[in-house]
Image (cartoon, rainbow over the protein chains, first blue to last red):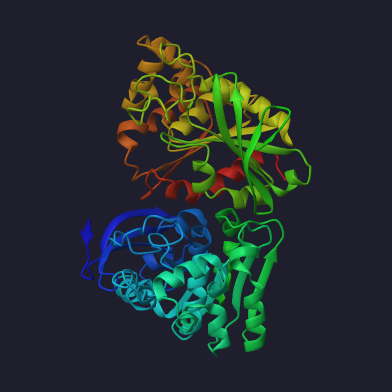
Length: 288
Length: 288
């Protein structure tokens, strides 16, 4: 493994669509652990040009590989000249008792927030990792344009894209999501995770809940793109996109919520519309 | 699981690119075991039209899911109106001692042939499964046009596509391969598998070796499309595409062998050129 000045170790690299897919490992000071992420560099970046970049956050149980393998985004990203960065979904090996017991809490379920409660708060700090450390190290090491940075995600990763994009609208210039958890404070996945990571005081949950952020005045200047399958098995219980639609209307947030008959929660759904998302980001980030 | 008149059980189905991705299980009389395969039906097939179909054979260690998930072929197949059928790479649970010992023999390594040697010959019959049983059952159950059928594959699956296409050129009307094992009789993967499945008499190997088939007069009326990465880690030891090029020249077989600098053996390579392969098949099968 080649070690770069930033402490990044390149674990794997393949030529793909004239660009490069790379998988890195590094010691994360935010997480206090070794962490992994994947990158796709389009041909223009491989030729040395600084390119716009979209961070892609995956859902429960996924890793840094999932979006890059299953979303089928690379062909269109290569055409548009967009880089992709895909982080892992939680710390790995934090040593929290029971972190591997449930698939929706602990390993693979970091919820892109900073835990405040014992025993999670030492390592479960994906919030700061996404908001700061990961962009710093990857944009220092690779030809990515820090002035043109978007964020997208699927399911728990859609939640991550919405909250990070709303909280830092000049940092993340475009936001899109597939089947996001829009209002974790009122659904089982979110309530379980937030109770564990943030404790019982629900006032502290608002900083990590897209609907609450809109209610509290956070807003993004660009239209947010959201795709939702109408046959999604988690639609009624966990996703409830109508909360986002209502909050966006109330807040004057531009939102393009597209609902697709027959599509479910899987990456077969994501891949069906991923090219639209990349074109949305490319247009907002003035790619190409 | 819904059971159809053909004995097919639909295990999983998702809407994708306006078409359907489906995973089936059935009892295979050829293999004497339960077997699985995946199908992609483009939107035209879902609307009831009979469509051309390409069978996609995966490589060592893969399953019926691998090509459909990792090749990223579905968007282009949907556009072209091509169905895809992806079988498993071997029988599963045949009970042969040591079938799970090595990754290049036994489970996941059926080599798309009919074994003649004990203890393999009872179940390791992927040759007849691909040549007859699978097309029969899938084309009876689904709106696929049996007069417009192509075959493609990757690595061991590229070997499978070449030998089946050459042996039955009116049955398989188009052939393409990524990084195929073109001459298994002279390389370690092939020698190990053929010795186990077919025995030491190398005369019996010729029926399952693309180069030998061309030497023995087998030929396909259409151009065979082959893509090979020049940075493929198995190029020199296992693939040796120059044998195919030489044999095709000697036999007068039209061959489009494209060599790609920097690409390796992975599905990152396959996905970079899969749309070209689908367009090749669509043109030969008069899709759309």
